[in-house]
Amino acid sequence: MDVLIVIKRLVMAGKLVITEKAQVEMLLDNLTEMDVIEAIVYSPRISKKIMSTSIHKENPGDRLYIIIGKTLSGKIIYTKGRVGRYANERVFYVLISSKRSMR
Image (cartoon, rainbow, N blue to C red):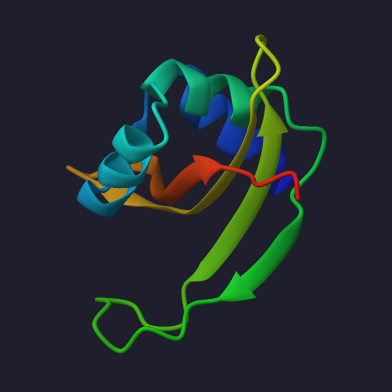
């Protein structure tokens, strides 16, 4: 199954975990959780797939997905996340989420 469809279904089912770092970024950019959800759900594609290089992760080498999407109010949001497990359920972790600069 297409990974973007998997991510969208997880997000729409409420299986979304927003990290503390992403929450701080959202606060600084005045973004809500609904903004992030809309940007993911309405994104037409995954912009980029990369491998995690963090040595502090439980699973180094996790595949990370960069999704750039627009909210219903027109905000462009950059989100980086991964599909993982939390409390024995499949979830989408939002690691970074911020407004995209239009410069």
